[in-house]
Length: 412
Image 1: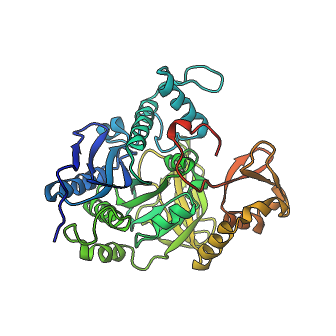
Image 2: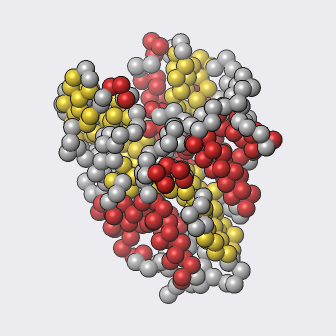
Image 3: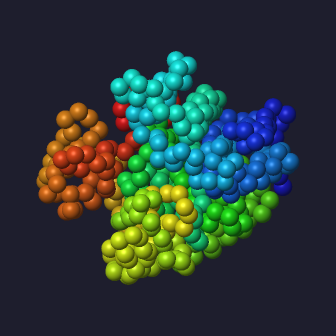
């Protein structure tokens, strides 16, 4: 039987603006922020959140905590394109975020490191509004904050999650019965989830399937309900159809490994005239040397055997495809033990590794050591790769309690 809220619960609707809607429980608890359509051609998350919020509102379900749904790139969503001027999921580098936060504080325009006004773009305006929304929701939070970034893919795909590999993000992702893909954050510069890692907020990306397929909406809806229950916002079984939800979601990813790791990224540009061969699905097995695509230079082949990941079947985007491989479950257990034990303190003792000259949370790996087991050990200890001239910089992933978004300029 459904449990209803008291009269003190707050329900909000956001029309077609930034806010999709919110459902605020009568009792304090975690805040779950869901962001949909960060890429404008990925509308499934919006419809899924509208469904969830409608069920909560119509049934007045009891909630401990708050659920907030936000639209990501409003202008690109209206145009039906991935982005207008620049990819909104590639602009969350520290310097840029700090400049936008500073502009929010002083009411002026965002300025670059030299003090000059940043070149205006549609996505700069979207980012500014999103950061203001995150600040607002943080001030209203009555418990720990969790962020779900809802996406879809240009190819057919089983659902999966992506994350910056902190222990709290990993725990959140493993609550869903779908594959977990690690290492994507090292391949992509400026993803939005990096910002939430910086704040210490638990966060994951949820990829539901192909952009325009109706089942992608169902996957996002199922995932949101599962996590609302797992995090204790709603009672298990309160939502209609909850008994079979986990089984349905698990079935969509049947036969796939539980955890995979990104091993290769094929970067493309408009000048490459890259065209993926038709018919590939996400997670298809590929062999070393197998032809996957063509560009102006000729065939594009797999560098090694693995599973094809995120093949590009849309006009916009600079990731032609990735290759992933299965990770042994023992890897997660060992890495957790090392991180809990504080093994990162001995990182500078590894061969070819030295303390970063300017950052207490980073080490530098010599070029001669980059292709050895050293990088793997640093990953186990909780470091993530950040490129830098003269060597590989490995930065310790942010673990710990949330920080104020307004104070985000302080390292990390």
